[in-house]
Length: 66
Image 1 (cartoon, helix red, strand yellow):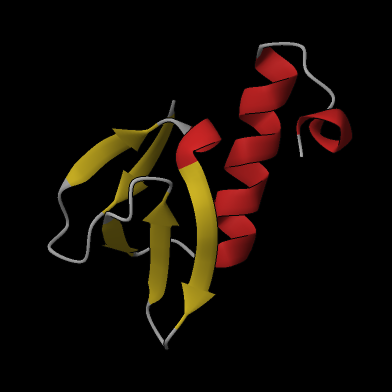
Image 2 (cartoon, rainbow, N blue to C red):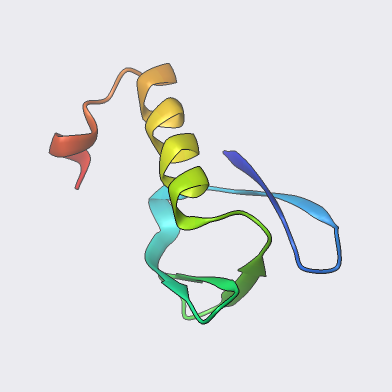
């Protein structure tokens, strides 16, 4: 799980395997596989870094996971 912050400053944890798309609209919008959407404070770059760290922790090469 990766920690993210909603626009209202509420912290939550998201399973990165559920991320379908990340958009900048100008806020960062994450859409997960079931269609649910989350606006978050983190930038795309921060999210990608957290996802990479998550995959390293569980010992999965990110290229093979995509």
